[in-house]
Image 1 (cartoon, one colour):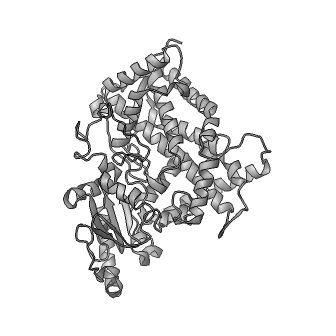
Image 2 (tube, rainbow, N blue to C red; image 1 turned 180 degrees about the horizontal axis):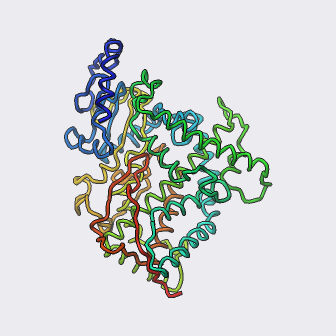
Image 3 (cartoon, rainbow, N blue to C red; image 1 turned 180 degrees about the vertical axis):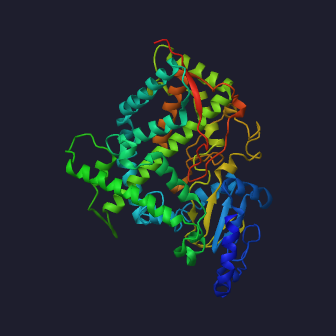
Length: 500
């Protein structure tokens, strides 16, 4: 195990650090309960390949408000809706910042991105800018014909595969669709994988997501960051180099063909309109633009594809739920045409399927970490300044005290029948997009894409697994990162079902 040799290495320098360790100076204030940590590393060795699973198991023993010491960092883990509400609503302002983060330092341009920027004037201004100019309902609606066109191309490909009785890698096709739509929104046109990097969009984006979520010694024992004991910094710099070269190319292309007033603009066109502005203490320049482009690209590409992929997997595993969605769509749309976005209103069972998918398979199982900007008391426990706060929405989605009508481990969309609960951050039992000031600003765009693509795939096709594979045998293993996609792709055979 990697932690063993790291621990042995640390013992050689432990005597140099022991006198200075902050955890030696014990506070008289009552911290939340939690496991006893190892010297230097604290509780880091308790986190394995899937930290959201490990934290869920620890919460079963220590409770829904748990204290861990990860290296030198006070860490608070939240695993219940009542406590999530305390951190994300009642004390939202105290926990609205982001902690220092090696991955975002190297990949997100020194934490200049909307996702990772610390709370303050810069973050407030770029959030307002992105919300009004890039993620407004008007901007989302302006890309409606593009979404129809790209989804239509996928449907035509799947019709050909159905005619030839061919099994296809649906996971890859969904990600490619999401990448193409994201590129057209952000850059104004599609780019081939090879124009980005030899590995392609998916591989590099997902590596960035994994690097962003992997527990990094440098984040928790800052003295050791320079040694890069896990080799993560080297990988981060390589990924950053790929992103930066591509974004420089994109910006140069857009600056050579600046859009006139009244012309249709993509996200980069809009962002370049702000370049050179002085906003209080900061000056918006290329690094800021590139950080926000990365936000928009990764936020719209990997997240939507992951949600659609998990929903399709669960529907293939549960034919009765698939049939019920198809019946609802047949009644609303008919069997003579494909789905339009205007058909999506009132599709209650489709919405229940999406909620249930996001409950069982939240795209970001631990959200993004928050940081306490001052000392605070929550539920009678002391939360120290600079504490890192992790909200385990994966664990909340499986809490039998919350999900009482059916087994929380089972995919049962009917659990939402008659319920007004939604995914928009008002109901803390279901937080796939987070809540409060740091809730996902792209939620509406994400939901629009997920609902439209999922409805089209289910309405236009029946889906069979390759011979010899039963639905119960599908591998449901996750690949942990900032997002948690399927580890193994969904391979299925489409059968076209419309009469057009």
